[in-house]
Amino acid sequence: MARAMFDVECPCCQAILKVDPETRAVIAHTVPEKLKPIEDLAAEVAKLKGAGARREEVFQKQFEAEKTHGKVLEKKFDELFKRAKDNPDLAPPVRDIDLD
Image 1 (cartoon, rainbow, N blue to C red):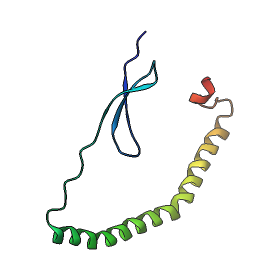
Image 2 (image 1 turned 180 degrees about the vertical axis):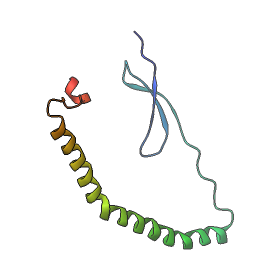
Image 3 (image 1 turned 30 degrees about the vertical axis):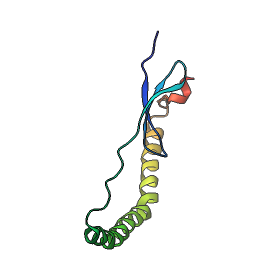
Image 4 (image 1 turned 60 degrees about the vertical axis):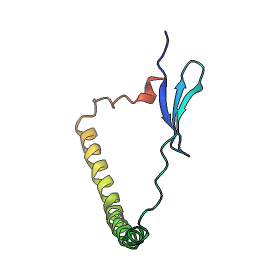
């Protein structure tokens, strides 16, 4: 049975590689378009000046989320533990790794 080729994105250059699963070889590739050169230098400088504030805002949001991450995981664990205690004869869910 012939399997269809599949596309993979290169992590280095973001090119799209078409791979044949039977031969495990790259059959074709598509190079991504290059970014156009900067036309308005003043506009690009203004974007860069605002980028620092945006990075700081994203960092603060992620920092606050990380503070509560432990509590969220603890609550999820407690809920699942409570379910397991309530139904001790219930089998655990089958994971993909268990099927091998």
